Image (cartoon, rainbow, N blue to C red; front, top):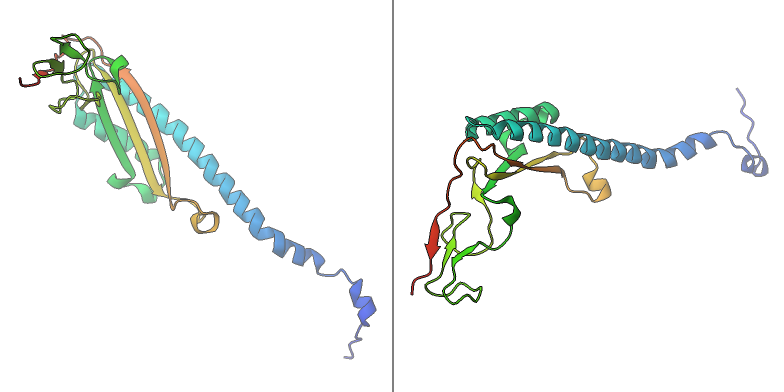
Length: 203
């Protein structure tokens, strides 16, 4: 079979195979954009579902009789249902619970209960309500756990797991996807609110 060789001038106008070359140039960018879209969409979906699950279980935990271990087990099980199967492990779900007698004092200075010279500063002989139970005066960081009756509980759940798609090396993203959800719930007044300890500065 004799093949006819096209002259250079004819080859210059030959567009056969051009679509394949164009696709080869566009495809990597298009595939990366599709994966990035799925990654962002999954993050939004996960945040919404995880937030709903946290709020539902936090409300249930605000009732008398809920224990911390029950809450932790339930919230982990709920998160495992929405996480990818490969992220079904304890390291993927981090749960934090901080309780306060007065939710309006979250991240505020602890209350000085005895101010002998009324200067608003904790001096020797003055006392404060140790809200977070750490024995040191400072910002009210909250006590660990579900608290008691009438306490405000600030729940934080952080989900961290490897991304669904291998985007990190190509787009400069962290290798792990992280989603954090929070909610604040006031426990039901099923009893008397626990009084926090009062600490004093030695004279």
